[in-house]
Length: 306
Image 1 (tube, rainbow, N blue to C red):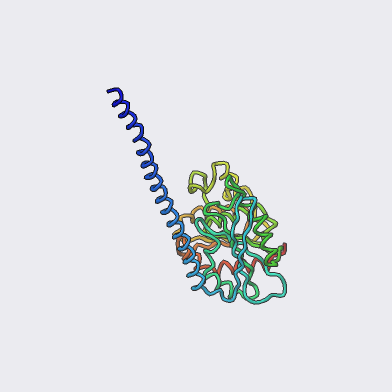
Image 2: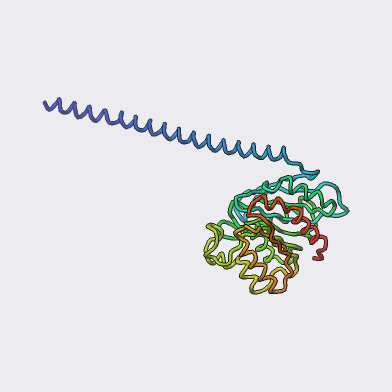
C-alpha cells in the first residue's frame, strides 16, 4: 500500500512538468502571435506613410523648385531629425535670404510641401527666399524644456546647417510658423532679436494664462511663465528690430489670445501687421494664404539692414 501511494505521488510529480511545459508553449505562442500583430501593424503604418508621401510628391508640382533633404544629428534634443529645404527655381546675383518655417502640432517637415506653397514661392521670382522646414517632434512646442532644447536646436543647429548647405545669406533670416510653430517662431524670435529680420505667427497657439494651455504644451507653470509671449509683450517689445506679422481665422479658438498678444505689442509701439480672415484652425486656411505669407517675408527680408 505504501508502495502504491509512493508511485501515485511520483506520478503526480511526473505529470506536473508536462502540464507546465504545455502552459509555457501556449504562452509562447500567444506572445509570438502578439508580436506578429505588432510587426504587421507597424509595417502597415510605414507602408501607408510611404504611399502618402509618394502620392503627395507625384501629385504636387514644385514649380521648378528643388527640395533638399538632410538630417541633423542633434545632441541638443538627443535625436536624429529630418529637415526639408526648398530652393526656388532660377538664379540670383547673390545668396538668397532664408526663411525658417515651423510646423504645427502633429505635423512634420513635409506638411507644407504642397501646391499652394510651391505656387506662391514661384510667384516671387528672384525675391523668393530659401525655405527650410525642420521637424520638431509631434508636440515639442519648439521651446527648451524637459524633453530637449528644442529652441536651441533651431537657433544653433538648424539655421547654421541650412545656411551652410544652401549658401543662404546669414544676415537675412526670417522665422515663422503655424499654430504650435507660430508660437515657436514668436518665442524664438524674442530670444534672438538680432538674428531675424522678420517673424510671423500664423494662427499661433497662444494662451493668456497657464491654466488655459493645452495638455503637453508646457512642462509646468514655470515652463509656461518662461515662455509666455503675451506676458513678455506686456512688459516690453521684444521684436524692436523686426517686422512682425500675425494672422488668425475668424473661427479660430486662438483668435482672442492672438488679438491680446497683438494689442500688447501695439501698446508698446510695435507696428504689427495683423489680419483676421474667414476660416478656422486648419490647413485649408493656411494654404489659402501662402501668397500673403511669402509676400510678407520676401518684403521684410529685402528691406532688412541687419
